[in-house]
Length: 413
Image 1: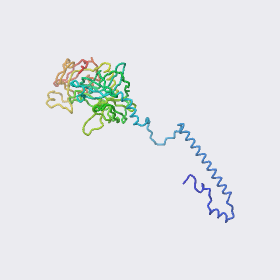
Image 2: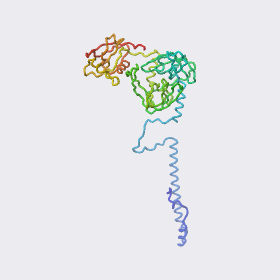
Image 3: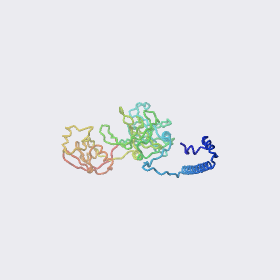
Image 4: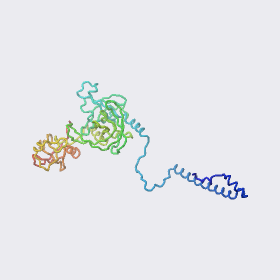
């Protein structure tokens, strides 16, 4: 059915109607017809005017942006959603183009490698040029990339090889800084704010996996602040926690030290590790730049990270992964109520001076519970300074004791 009824809209008169009019001696009924024609013309004119006015108002409102239709009752509005700024694939291309020249490949010629040109006796990694002064450019990478280096070289995106010098490295945060001659270095990576990352945000990883330099992969942020247990001494005892960004962007051996980049072309993480096991995919990790930069700046200015040092080598009293044998527990002669703490295996430096001994069980620092080697290290690094007096509560052969220790600076390893 159209806007108008067919009988009203039609201008034709059926033949049967005309014959009936003639048989009655009537004319075509001009008065009636005139009345109907007059009525239809008026209605059409009125409706046309109304429609024209509505269309004009709508067009004007759409063009000027002043049209705000009333929100339907019960409708849901999602607030604070940033509109897409373009094709996401094009944004990946642009972000990669911004950062690629600042990402370098690193070749670590090991100390025992006499033939420096044999790459299979060297380790490979990646790095990010993040700062430049008049004579030097500085590169962030991982400590494990440069560990045990006899000679360090970097390879730029253009294929140029340069000698690199180690400025400083820190095993705890797994961050190191290198320096190279700044001549010809024109691109410096922009550092982003990793605290503003969101789950599902698209990121790209750039690095030197398996020696395939200048490799780009993409994925999303799977988790923003994942805590991964770390064994600093590689002895199976988790004595530190690394806070990392989890991503499903492909990260492989050689990507370590490379850049994790957002779609604005800013580095928001330093790729550091992946979980590699049968049936495991898409579990890569990067150190957030907000943690990296503080360490990098101190390494650049001092060449090392200064931390408090107690001087004890310990094992956990209650470790589900490496439990103490029953005869070892009996030898400690602890009260039944003592379930958590750390057992001293060796005491050197300040700890030895203070009188700590083998098989002492530390349970508190300054009145705060110490339940594991991890909590001991975290308390020392996060809550004390070099030169502080630390009050230690411990058990020796079942007897509760206390001792005060003056903390020194952690020696370089």
